[in-house]
Length: 187
Ligand SMILES: NC(=O)c1ccc[n+]([C@@H]2O[C@H](COP(=O)([O-])OP(=O)(O)OC[C@H]3O[C@@H](n4cnc5c(N)ncnc54)[C@H](OP(=O)(O)O)[C@@H]3O)[C@@H](O)[C@H]2O)c1
Image (cartoon, rainbow, N blue to C red; front, side, top):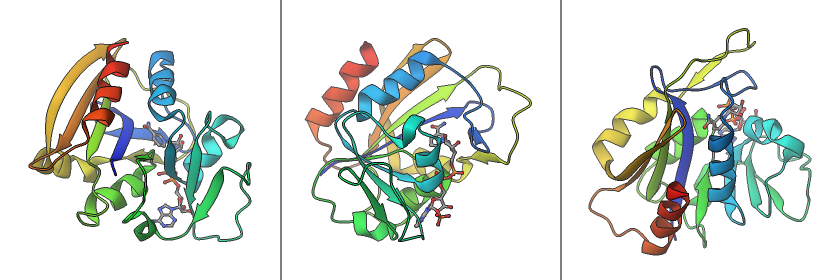
């Protein structure tokens, strides 16, 4: 089964968020994210889940990582609490990894069974919104792994976001998932 990590980071410093906010508003990018994950299984950290409008994504099953096993989800049928990232080692279906920072890092650094097969690396090269409150959250620790273990398959640019699809070096990657992402990148 295929694991796909997807993010949008700032070109200069790999920033993905300031506190509870993504520090840019690019409609085409948020729509691209929704189209890639729509109808799929998605895993994310609790804070990313809480930052989603209405704490949901269209037609998705959402797996929320949190140490709080009593955590109340917004949709008991389709959203699930998970307290150990290792539970995804033998996940029986395709899985989309949607952050935040520690979640990406956990999947990228915890061995072959969690390592994403595909990374959709969106890189925003514009101004970052100022006046946002909160800590700067970046995914710099993921970058050396991306360089070492992945190879770029394709790249394009929409608005000020460069979208790159990378696959794990030297491994079989499901063609149908690649094809789906490729098609969405081109539209
Ligand atoms: N630009 C992008 O592509 C992008 C992508 C994703 C998110 N974001 C933004 O990033 C912000 C949130 O990111 P974040 O990094 O601060 O937080 P986050 O990863 O979404 O959530 C952190 C929380 O998730 C839980 N968690 C994380 N790893 C875990 C693990 N291995 N096991 C168990 N629980 C785990 C913990 O919850 P408990 O405290 O409950 O234990 C932790 O406090 C939001 O603003 C979001 O919109 C941006």
